[in-house]
Length: 466
Ligand SMILES: NC(=O)c1ccc[n+]([C@@H]2O[C@H](COP(=O)([O-])OP(=O)(O)OC[C@H]3O[C@@H](n4cnc5c(N)ncnc54)[C@H](O)[C@@H]3O)[C@@H](O)[C@H]2O)c1
Image (cartoon, rainbow, N blue to C red; front, side, top):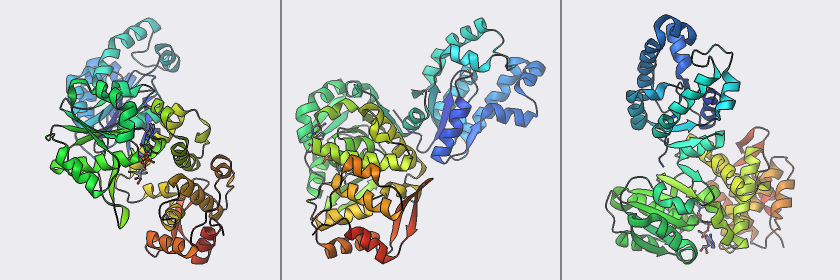
């Protein structure tokens, strides 16, 4: 795995695979420019591709294509780039893809591709027999050039974020950790007893050491720093929930001024939220997540089958984030079965974070409900489970947005909690640093709005019993 964080996201694949349609959609979700190389060439030469083929032959077209592809891939801010079906024949283009892009092979059945392109005057789609032969010939080239294979929009987004979601992914871990260097496995102590052996076996000869952890304090961090024992070529592999991935990710961000890390989230919170987006942190006695870093994992390996052993209370914590994601996405994602639920939620968070890796704007939408949730958690002295706090927070956010709170009520059944009202209010003001900008939900997704103090306070009060 690798990511498209600081590089182009290139789409390769056969004609009729839908590279242009998908490319436009992905570019919109990631907030990037979309470059369709075939269209660029047509615009530059003021001729259609069939005209270029007719005038200059396929060889003439390929020369132009290589020029255009190299110029685009070697320059400019990270964009989404769709390449023509034959572009991967050029070794120079393949090399530029390796150097400057995260490349996704957009796969399609040859029959479907033929249906889409036949009769459209494409020079290389004149008859079905030679079309299918060309498909067979090019398949291996696409696979060789690509870092990932995808068919849907969500899968392209996940590939761009370096996230691999599949039942059984844990068994493939050895092959999914980028590079060839040694791996230091950092595992939640409890999870190590359940899934640790599978992870160790999957890492095979690359496994250099195993470290069990049980928290994310400065002491836990120092213990890890001192025992990791890898060099700059090594990779930290974190196996556990958000506590473990936050700790191991921050250790990786700081150890030897930064080594690669791979997240293997084992909780629902981890799979749909904590292990995605590159935020890492430890807790200090003064505040949670007070010290941290942005350090995007080189890969995130998500195996929804690992959720089978998760206690119900932990699952409920995760469902609160799932409902939040569904509300933001405008789709009842909470109704899906685990694998699809995780895939869709992980893709949603991946897109928002790729768009705003350093939390400077769009990513704030992910705080929907969290301002209230944090205030309640803090007022309870962190006795209140995170999921319950977020569920209540979502309720407040929906009420303030004037929207139907039914999904939150039906799926998460939040009950008011007996915490000190003044303490909760003070915690909310601290969290907001004096400005009452609250994330609300509108028809087109979330937005921030500064609200009158009285409205915010009464929304918070409604979440508190007694
Ligand atoms: N970095 C981020 O963007 C981000 C986002 C959300 C939360 N977080 C952080 O995540 C942390 C919470 O993480 P969490 O909710 O995943 O909980 P967690 O990591 O604390 O794990 C909760 C419990 O579940 C157990 N467990 C984990 N996986 C299991 C499995 N598959 N089977 C059985 N037991 C399992 C663990 O041993 C632990 O007891 C907080 O510290 C929070 O700050 C970070």
